[in-house]
Image (tube, rainbow, N blue to C red):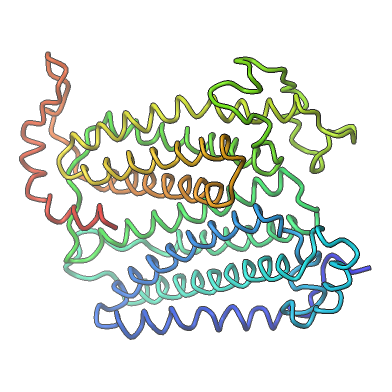
Length: 411
């Protein structure tokens, strides 16, 4: 029987992760070294953010293709650094159960996910090294806003190590729903940390332009919407990890009823094995329906918050592009969510639904981070008697920054 933890391929996996990260690291150094440490930090943070988004998407693909146990041990595959060395035990497991969790295809999907995660970890170490070197060099004398210090890159490195631990538990605890959901949330948190750093770096340096001021009401709504989205993403992860998507196959009804039979107590027992309740009995359809139903109905207020925030941003000079992007992503999320139900959970729609949630979270975090650095609006920015926003002096001061903010919004 294969041990759950086999550390013999660990060094080879780390070497492979370093090899994968060398390409991006060399590219950043060659293309952005003229911009100094700040320029290299900006470029490497954006590249790491892009690859982390890809990693979240590939993690969803791994989960949705039932490849999470394609290699039943960790960190390698049957004690090897790749499925090539593990060909014989994989073939034996596949012959015993052709549609089971271990096949050659699933093993490769699982290991590619681990390779990508290792490479992202190396890039995050590179971000910490650049932040340390910039701290030693000191701030740019002409910079109005200093670059983010060591704290956030260090916390990001700690977080990615914690995320790796949850990845190990995902395998060794046999897709324990609470662990898989926390692993998904950890990946999104990593994405948010990188977005926050990317925004901070874009606003640092002598060539940076701050975005125009955002009315306090929209800043507060952005925070509220971000919190609500995280609740909905958690519920969505719980639906996915419990395979409750198909508990309702019609819309807007569920099983032909507005209020089908549901067992909320059993459905939201958190600490239990996959497919079982805490008593070790198989989850009932009523429990799966409750999981699905809560996610569906919480989506309504979240979509309303997203629509209200998008409307507010579109009406605010300098934030219109962010508002339009938010509206587009919310529409995509609604479309893919509906497709998952009425089309029987197709793989493409399911992966895009996870990607849409990640993109929405990243955009909301970027709005919150940028608005914190924006100058406070003048006292004249308040609701007028007719209910419209009277921008007054604050908008006139912000107008000069619109051109620079377009670059920030596009990032």
